[in-house]
Length: 150
Image (cartoon, rainbow, N blue to C red; front, side, top):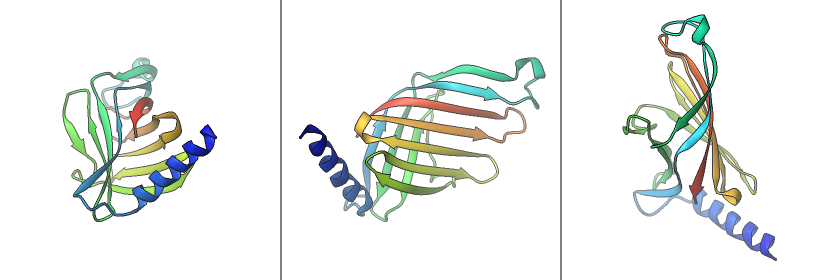
């Protein structure tokens, strides 16, 4: 019965998520600090001996995923420098894929500079996300995990 209730709540939430909100933006998910790993690619400011994997944490960061009343998704991050950045305001294109009991995937593309993949996992209150940047000075690929409130 407990599993049935969770599935009902999740699918009810998916209907809500896929229905345009009446308010300006509807918060879908709010996540705290992220912990994971980064891979620094050799080149630019990264010499060969400094390239490779390292632990990576954004301890003071947060992620918010919203859906506008126009049906547009956005991902807003408070990064390690305590700067709040909206993907949509930075000119990124955002696409949602899937939506079932296992989660939702959102892909964010910043033309010419980076892309991100967010896997929202409502049943376990978490998000797993990946980012890769194409900066000529510091090219970096990262994968993170954070706990969330749905």
